[in-house]
Image 1 (cartoon, rainbow, N blue to C red):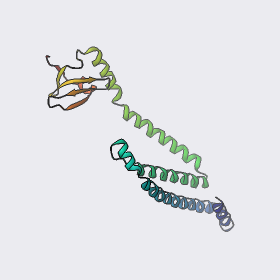
Image 2: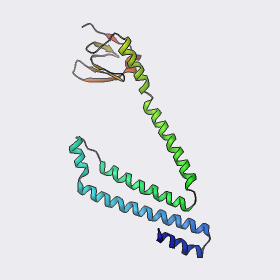
Image 3: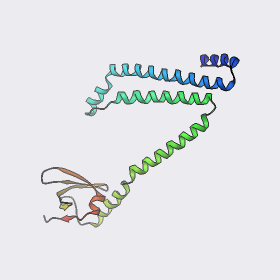
Image 4: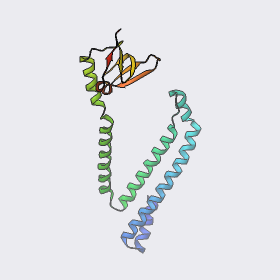
Length: 185
């Protein structure tokens, strides 16, 4: 920060304080973005030498680009800190952070609502099906031109095995909204 402070001090003598603030903010942004780019190159080199992706692929069993996710996360974190420092130089930090925080909260709430919009109807339908319908695990049923044997029933979904030995996982609201025909044993 001493380099930036000395640059600001030099600029203070030559220009107006407003221009000095803007120039310092631009310098902070440039330096921060350069540091973030250098970090991403260094991190990519280190993580590739450790072979983190291969480790996760062998451990978990499927390809997962954890290296890219970590590099992107840290790089964007450095970008974020750089932008906050530049905004602080312009005395805009609190207003911008408040706006960003409200936007993040709104996005999180909307995402949660979208994510659970089918969750509660499935639980209610599952509860109703488990306690009031006369079907149970082992029954053969037909619905929507699909024939299957009930393998498992939970509050969220029902697993069926078709005559072709395929498994179907059906959300309980789907079964609840259609006509289900129980076949004789």
